[in-house]
Length: 184
Image (tube, rainbow, N blue to C red; front, top):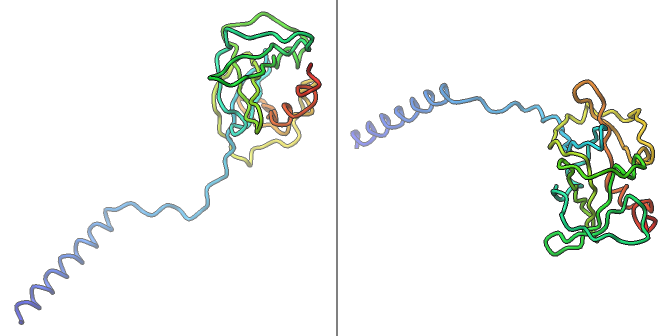
């Protein structure tokens, strides 16, 4: 019996030694400080104006569909409707709405598909740059930008490369009569 307790003590000592050794080699637990909240958005351009849209409001980014069916009697910024994987997608030209000028399509044009409960909606922008993340503490609550009809839909801004980039609330823009039933 003495031999069994000696083996047990030796085994316990070996395990305790390994524990001390591996704790010394192991990494420390993460800092208990909570992480800084981060906001994510899609950076895009409407002609020369850089804008951000909340990531959660964008379902996808598409190339401009080749087949867009025009809808007669609509405003100049209503390009028409397209088939997006079996779903009817109304498409609006954000530059024509914001600047009042309809211009030729460019290869860099993209369609931001805006999430909605009912029917998704596509907004043509001049270029999508990508997803950007910002610490929420860097938010500018009162951006000073002259965006014309888009101005009321700017909810804040984030600093990027020395300028404040406006955040466009796409959900509010799409729900507004300007693009809703008032567009036709």
